[in-house]
Length: 371
Image (cartoon, rainbow, N blue to C red; front, side, top):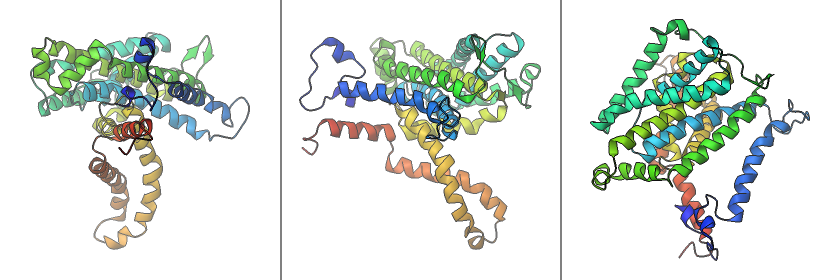
């Protein structure tokens, strides 16, 4: 949307400027400045090389988790937002990437740098298998088909593959190394995860400008019309499932090596629903949606809801004496999250990214924004 609009008085003068992702000097400076700011954040913590305490060390782990889930939600965005194929099995594909990379490192002695692409490709192939029903079914029925993956994959990891995955017990993951140096410290993994997350975000953004991305969007808008125009709908749907699972595999691998431990509890159905909620809040179909959605949900779960719960606990047991106070406390977190999601869908059904696009368009059109 806003990428096709220039600020008042600014015009494209070359083909290179017309096809650039960031078409003005301000956009390029802002994008590069934000990336550099991300890279210097670990240097400003107390555990950094300069011993500064300008940024809390807790922020490093939070940013890492956001970056990992941005990759996962971006994969879901390719499938749901770009291609219009609903999925409730994304967490299961993350589990495939996480456990396959861990097994490659533990059993076969492969390094993190080899296990990462191999596990991502393997996860993409698994995504292809569960994408096969998209030839015959769509909508609610496709949701049921992808939901099968969410039950089948964890079951396989828990029981038949228990000798490799430890089943329901935690699985230790080797510490990644680079040129013989350990990457055990979270600040070291920070400089692996953040550039990779930014690169994959840019790749997904650029995907919409390619032949494949335009085919995805045409299938999302009207798959019958796309087929009549000569687009191989089934082939492109499978490509969307492959790319979506590929991104999920990368996120799962990074999650495994960042935490150095795996449990199946991280990849159950509630995680798939949470990933879909992040995408809906961010705005499905927008390249910036995963970042905004993941950041919003993390802020809500880690800061806003924990601040509200003590206030509610102070008077709810008196108002609801027929309910055990322990049950009230346990139910508040999911109840508040669900309520926030419902209110958000009412107030901004197209997501935060859509609101951001509207704001950018109004800013670029100034002083004619009100005309």
